[in-house]
Length: 134
Image (cartoon, rainbow, N blue to C red):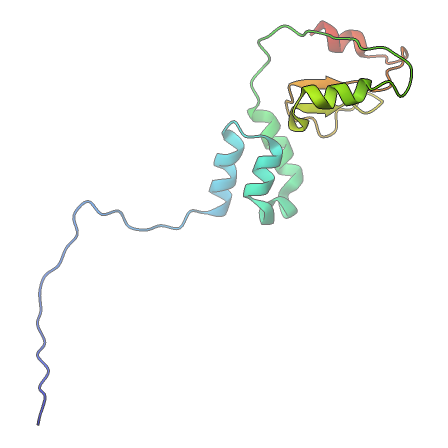
């Protein structure tokens, strides 16, 4: 038995079907930085690029932050060591919303968190009036 192949030609076209284009990883990184995501979210979504371009990502992400438009409120919690002041803060706020301000003038790692904690505050902080006056 002989099988003959039949070749049919038909015209086929697709209308309104978008061509699949793989998104450029750097374009995705740019979009993620420009959206209202935290820096840690940008790093998680773009881990491989974050390893290589972490300094650029921090600077570019910082440029995207909008100026503050709200009044600063200050809460002072005092008490002897070991009475649970820090634990109370951790209990009342999500850990991702808290920035633990290191001693000194630098704000390394600050990413627009809602709460800033000056733990073990000492009156010699030279910039505290500037922080609270903003």
